[in-house]
Image (cartoon, rainbow, N blue to C red; front, side, top):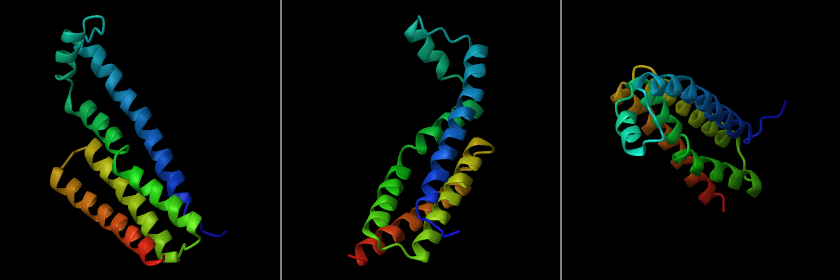
Length: 138
C-alpha cells in the first residue's frame, strides 16, 4: 500500500474525536459532582473553576488540538496539493501526529509540564521542518 501524506491527518482527526469522548467522559461526571447548574451562570462559572485537574486537563488538551494542529492540517493539504510530497515529509507528518498523541497522553494523565513542553517543542520542530521543506520546494 502506498503511503499517503493525508493519512496522518486522518489519524490526528480521529485522535481529536477520541479526546472529545474522553472530555465528556471526565467532564460531565465532574460537573455533576460539583453541582454545576447552568441556569445560574455566575454560580456555574465559579463551580466550573473548581473541577478536578483530571477533567480540566482533558478539556485543555482538547482545546490544544484545535490550535497548532490547524497549521499542520493546512500545511499537509498544501504539500499534498502541490505534488511535492517526499518520504521525509510523510515521516515528519507521522512524527508530528505521534508527538501530538504523546502530548495528549501526558497532559491528560500525569500532566508533567516539562515533559509535555519537550514533546510540544519536538512536534513544533516537525511542523517547522515541513513548512521549510514546502517553501524550499517552490
